[in-house]
Amino acid sequence: MAYVNEIKPSDITPESVYRRRRELIGAGLASPLLALAGCSEAKVPVAVNTAKDSPDGFKTLDEKTRFEDVTSYNNFYEFGTGKADPAKNAHSLITDPWIIQVSGEAEVTGAYHLEKFLKDQTVQDRIYRLRCVEGWSMVIPWQGVPLANLLKRFKPTSKAKYVAFTSKADYRQMPGMAYNSIPWPYREGLRMDEAMHPLTLLATGLYGKPMPNQNGAPIRLVVPWKYGFKSIKSIVRIHFSETQPQTSWNMLQPDEYGFYSNVNPAVDHPRWSQASERRIAGTGSKLFADRIATLPFNGYATQVASLYKGMDLRKWF
Image (tube, rainbow, N blue to C red):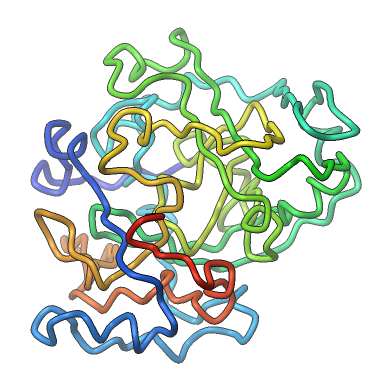
């Protein structure tokens, strides 16, 4: 059972604002300190969480966001554009049976029931930060399978340069689709080396419970160094592609939504700074904790910055 917090209307992003959200990813990051050097000191609070990660990045020691808040404050447009809408509406999603179609540049393809798709895989515990482009963040204990472990089973060929993902799209089960706020179905993608990185997770649960519908049941992507909208929910298709796949927000507003969307505090959003964030606190009547510094690559630069060596991240944002 998911517990739903009572959320003030002022804490819910209006659709007119959310649809104009954007992220402008700045110049390449040689190191976290170099990335922050371009930010005004007045905009960057002291980061109190920079020394709290394990060396491999799999488990941050940051205080975890409460289960009640993780499951009641969500972006999942298929169930509505308000933050409380998914928790109210996602009960209509049918997650059993669940079929995942694997296609494209791989030796093994086909349609798989979720149980067969995950067969013989060991579920791992991860505690990852999730940073939204709107400026709020959570720390979530996930359970899931490293994406690389699954992709290897399908033996992608040398032509597979990217992996594309597609969410479920069913107007009968997903009332938010009636608004046509984005081109359905929801699509996302990763470069192959990003998909095969050890941090990239296909999550099946959180807080030791099966994945709640509003959080992307029964299986979703979690890419902790990228803005949250890259972590596509309720996946029904995985496609190996030779060319860069289309992604939903990029299709809608290509000048505002890039393919990579790595967290970068050094470049401000046109309407707010990306240098700091509001961690979901959920203490008493206070939804947000005090602002903290946003870290380059969301605090995972040590693990992933090398993936983008030599890239101009202002061009490839």
